[in-house]
Image (cartoon, rainbow, N blue to C red; front, side):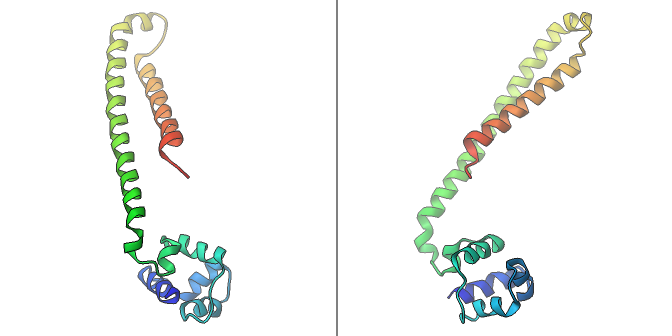
Length: 144
């Protein structure tokens, strides 16, 4: 089963056995033995293969999708939640920018007398908002 899955994903990615063997830092014959089910890679190599082919180790080991439905649903919900939250953040950011631009328009004569440029102030505020969004994503949305 493992060999069939390895061959399937390798061929789908249009890679040669030699290319995969070079990635793993093994001889082509060693990788070929994996595909022919003559040898089984250790856990670290299996993990590297899954990462390289962008699949799960469960897939490589033959676990069917029926057994993964719950995991797929959790991943799907997480992705949807991330994009919903990102859209809400974008909406709030745009509202904040409009308010700030309005305030700067009102305060422009004061800033101008002190030598501040209103476009520079908008740029600085926008950078601050972008930094806040990135920090929010890093802390709350992206789980590694």
